Length: 136
Image (cartoon, rainbow, N blue to C red):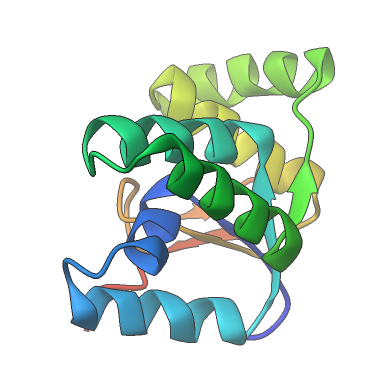
């Protein structure tokens, strides 16, 4: 799918890690087909997962954040993003962090949100489609 797309943290983790080569290839393919966006939240969550779960040393975490900051356009979450996230949470019943992801994607004008955490194929606010890049 072409167009503007937003990527959830889990997709970045698969791009970074070599633990699952199939999912890494699927994530790479999804990123290559789009104008790719992430948020400061996604970078923050990536840093947490890379250091805590993947047990990466800090220089590797820093390199990953730098690489993703150049590969993707980065949306900075603002107070307006937080307020929009409360509306998303109320409307769809999503968790706070998923609502922040959706709010940022909507603010960026994205047509697609790549995530394995939300319902594949769901249409949000009449314009943002959730796609799980790992569904075959």
